[in-house]
Length: 101
Image (cartoon, rainbow, N blue to C red; front, side, top):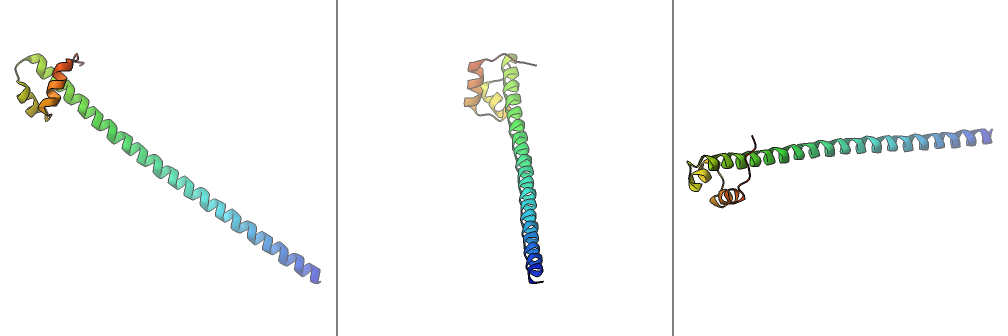
């Protein structure tokens, strides 16, 4: 009878221990999945913002190139219209990159 109680108590303790370990593992897996999803979302948002900023900068350069090709605007006027510095406009003018439409 004592050995049966001991065996039952021992088995119950082992079962409870296994349940705790499994619960902990499930919690860790859920936490890791949530963290990875958050990191992925933040990475996508950052990439999108960087892409948008790069696209706006490229469009400003193309606009300055078109304005330069018209030969109606001074560099100061182009800088004022494009919201670029005069140095940036001069650099674009010096590079004289072909306009892509």
